[in-house]
Image (cartoon, rainbow, N blue to C red; front, side):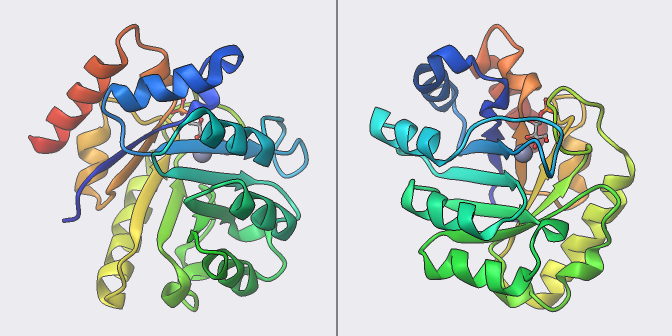
Length: 221
Ligand code: DX5
Ligand code: ZN
């Protein structure tokens, strides 16, 4: 099993103090920053774009930034986030007209490329692009909002996708997003996930370091 990464979603951070609240979760022990981009078109909510990613870099955030694009169309935002300092860029399979091309654009621009599967999306969409993936992100809620309940069927999908990754021989991270917390992180890891997005579970706590520590101790157990 690969090393586990904890990726707080800054969707649940204090937007008025975003730089500070992003650095705070990193100081508390997080590994990467999950950056949720919503366009009020592909998903029914609106957040932030490449200028905010660049601003976090300028503020001094040096950790990997994991940009989760919930936008349509996709390709223009890939270009913009490559320039804005994204480390990972993931997009939804249904949102790109040409998935293979969008994945190639991300790697050609020097970032790690990933595809996102909604709760009802089949893993079959991964089959012919495994060689172009650095990350697969499984949505365990319907995208658009933080604080939703984990959809249990995602565990079965995670097991299937873990098998696909292992059979492929490629080095691909398996990430999960939505409804993740101390209470279910172990079960999710047992299904083959190695990268955990958590928004409300971390930012909703008084002590970020304590929640992250509890998550790591569940993962170690
Ligand atoms: C939902 C976002 C998630 C969300 C997770 O569309 O992609 O990253 O912020 O939030 P929690 O952990 O609160 O479910
Ligand atoms: Zn996300």
